[in-house]
Length: 157
View 1 (cartoon, helix red, strand yellow):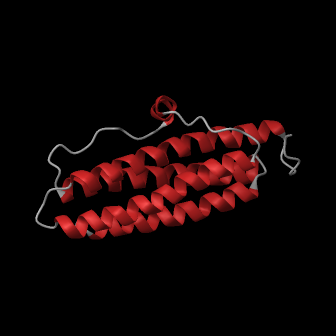
View 2 (cartoon, helix red, strand yellow):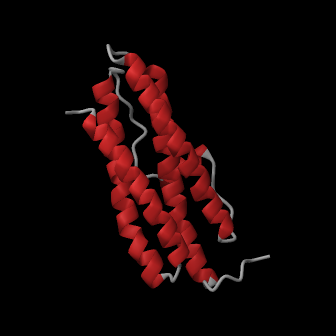
């Protein structure tokens, strides 16, 4: 049964298409953060290892929330690795050196890419697709990514 929530099916589909790209980005960023957590090798290992753990924990919650928002809108997620790689804006490339500065720079670039994407789609979803609930949800995610990016940026000073 399709939801009767005041958003046309066409608009819900358009919102889900945008959310599917975001879900792919979030999952790739989560995976890259896990990779950094598992593979960090540097004098600040323990601190950065724990820092990455906090970040991937937050990202795990975001991935789940985006998938649940897609389900709330009456659609299924396209949650295969192949689909994620086809949809994402992010590169799967990782740092070869396994040092904290390299990982942090890559993850910061990815968070900033997600932030830019969120800024691009929030007003469209609210104004054109008439889904203020999803726009509000995305604004919350934007704030979380801005904070995670700030934390990463602080490590580079």
